[in-house]
Image (cartoon, rainbow, N blue to C red):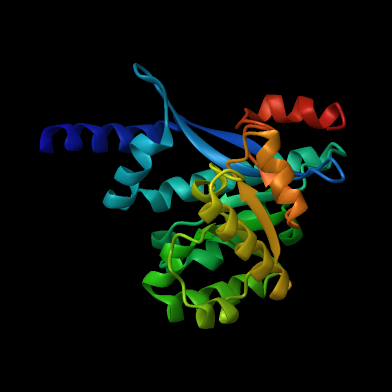
Length: 259
C-alpha cells in the first residue's frame, strides 16, 4: 500500500508539473425559467496510461499530501481564463463555481492569490462563487468565518456544499457570510419515495428561505426528483437530468446554441 501511495504521489506531482489535468464544467439550471445560471468547475486527470482518472481516485491523495493547494490554484486559473473568454465573446455562462478545500482556505496568501488571478484573467468578482463543504467549515468554524467574511467582502459569492452532512450548529450557520445552501445528493437520491430524505430536503429548503439564502440541489437525475424540489421551493438544480460534466468545448457549443 505504501509503495502504491508513493508511486501515485510521484505521478500526481508530475501531472501537476506537466498540466495533465482537464477542467470539466457541470451546468446549473433554474428549471422554472429554463435558464443556465452557472457552471461548476470539476477536475479530471488525463493520465498518459490510465486515461481519464476520476477525482475520487486522486483528490484524497492530493489533500493528504498537500498538493491540493497547487491543484486548486491551477483549476482556479484555468477555469477563470476559460469563463472570462466566454464573456468576452458575448456568451453568458453565469456564475463560475469553484470548490475550495480547507487547506486552501488555511493558506495565508489565499486572498492575495485569488485577487491576483482574477486581475490577470480579467475576471469579475460577481462571476465567481466559492463552494466549501459544511464539514470543512465546522473543523474550525471561527477561523473559517473570519476568512469567508474577507472573501465575501470582495463581492464573491459563497456556497455551503453538501449541506446537511456536516452537523453544523445553526448558531454558526447564522454567522456564516454565505449566499447559497447546496443540498447534498445523498438526500436527493431517494426523494420523493423516502419519507426521511423528503422531510430533510423540505426542511433545508425552508431553512434557506427563512435565512433569505438561495438553495440548489445537486445530484438530480429524475423528473420526479425535479418536480418534488420545485414543488417545495427549490427551483435551481444540478445533476445528470440537466447536464453531465462537460468539456469547455462542449459548454461553449451549448452557450452558442442559447441554452
